[in-house]
Length: 222
Image 1 (cartoon, rainbow, N blue to C red):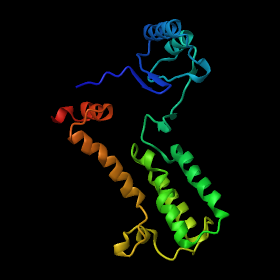
Image 2: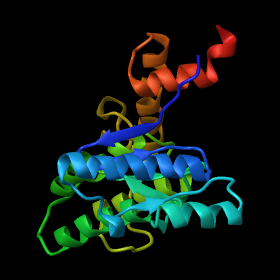
Image 3: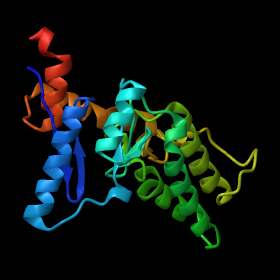
Image 4: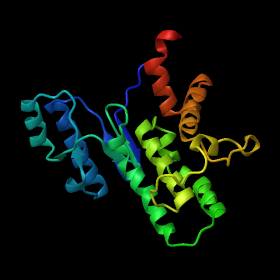
């Protein structure tokens, strides 16, 4: 089963897919012109970008002459998630790390007890990455950096000081009944979130994501 997607639309964000040739570019241009005539709405050229894949330089110039958009480069953000043509690297997760650092910076000036910091780690810091972790395999380097930030916040109120940790972080992540503090193990949490998609594929869910995964990767095994 092949999945022939021509467009993805969410709110006012629209992705249009086409062949890398002049005829396809003209079809898109004519469709946008027709949309303008019917609705009175104009495409924002300065906010639109075009992405090429395996298109020769001469053809790129022809297409850009038809659709005068800026050339976009990967990764780009769609619904807050970096769109990559390869696996996610730690350099693609810098914004996630900065968001966690900013939260800790805002809390450093407050007189928080050990229990208060632990509660913020469990309820806020280890939850910031959940949206991304439910879609991508988070790089190990990023996971380690998040754990480092959480560890420094727990033991030294955000200051990176060696020798402050009283217990190994792996022990901190154990359930309380096993002597830990119940902090999420981010690697296992990431695996569990991604396993949800496998469960949906097995149960033949009809969403676009599950249909695409099943059609591309599982069709030869059926």
